[in-house]
Length: 213
Image 1: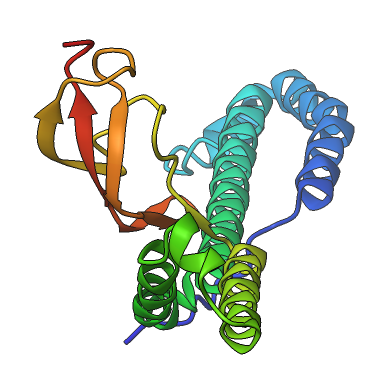
Image 2: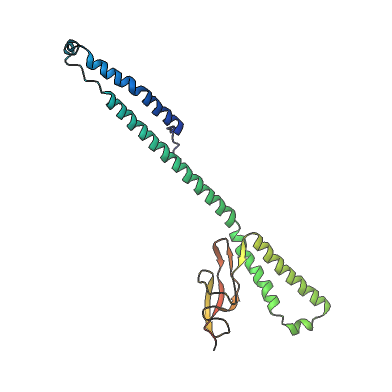
C-alpha cells in the first residue's frame, strides 16, 4: 500500500525568492555585527555568561546551506515526477500495443487453415475446377488477404520468409537444405511466423539454405 507524500516541495521560484531575501539581509547582518563591535566594552562585561550570537557570515552560510538543501530536494522531486510520467507513458503504449496479443495468437490458426486450403490447389487443379468452385476459391483467397490486412492494421505482421536472412529472433530452423538461396538465408517456409510490435507471436518454421548443391 503506497503512502501519500504530505511534504510540499518548494518550487524553484520560491527558492530564488529565498535567495533574494538572503542577499537583501546580508548588508543588514553585517551592519549589525559592526554595531556590536563598536559597542562599549562595559556592555559586554555586564553579561559575561551571555551566549555569543552567530556572525553575519555564519548566518548567511547557514541560510545558503538550507536553500541548497531545499533546491536539491526540489530537483530530486522533479526528476522523480518525470521518471514516473515516462514510465506511465511507456506502460500505456505497451498496453495499447499488446492488448490484442492473445486474440491475435488465436487468429493465427485461422490464417493457417486458409493458407493450407490454398496451397493444396496447384495450377492444374484450378484449371479443372468448375465455375462455382472457382468462385468459392476466389472467396477463400479474398478472405485470407482481408485477414492479413486486418492483422496488419492492428500491428500483427508476417515474418520475412524465403530469401530473407535467417534471424533466430523470428525464425525457427527445422532443417538445413541445399538451395539456390545464399548460404544462411531462408530456403523454405514450413509455417509463417508473426510479430506484434517488437514481440514475436510465433516464430516462422523454416529450412535454412546450405548453399547450392
